[in-house]
Amino acid sequence: MMKSAILSGHFESAFYIGKHFLSTNSNNLNNDKLAEVYMWEAFACAGIYKDDLFVQYKNLALNLSPKNPQVYCILGNIYWKIYDDTSNAIDNYQKALNLMPKENLDYFILSMELAQIYKNLGDITKAYAIAYNMIISQKELPNIENINPLDTPIYLTYAKAYDILGNTQLAKIYYQIAFNLNPNIDIPEKYYPNKVEKLQYLPSIIIDINDTTAIELKTNIFN
Image (cartoon, helix red, strand yellow):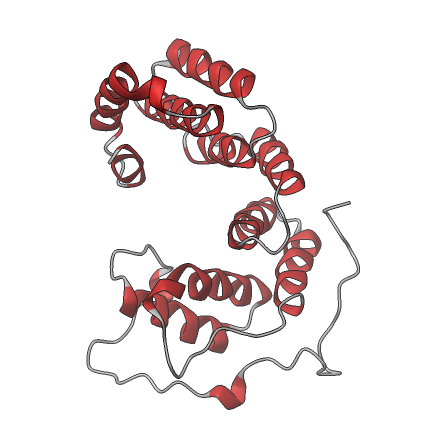
């Protein structure tokens, strides 16, 4: 409930939900889970401008579980989405990625967040490299014929990658699949589905990673 409230922008509600949860359940959680709750509470505090409490909960989380990638991922979100501090956002996203297995779905989701920051900063080379490397690293692309609602985060991640790469045709397909599965997803306005249009999913236009017309960007920001 606290996470959902934060993602919906209801920071004050999230703050009190978290405060109550911590007072009644903190002894039932392992260090990793407790640290994540602390960092979500830090997120809520930042959202209602309780900066002293933000620092307090942030430090509790980092001290309790310094090797937990989710803690750094949440902290990166705080710096980016609350404080507009891209430097600290990049630093914490990078720490999270360094601690995550590369086959983890969260790794790819977070990679696209990092790519979007670089794009916003005008560092197109790094943004393109992250998006391109994410796509070609996959053995199989998401199925767009037998769509699984559980794969919504995957479709959304691919949509963001293709959008960053400038392939609006593929980005549109994946954004609209994700949107059809979950209309609450926030997608770029230009990709909102036309209510009267029946979207056709065309497997034939899915990217071929061996396509010689593709430009491979050698920059590897993960090293």
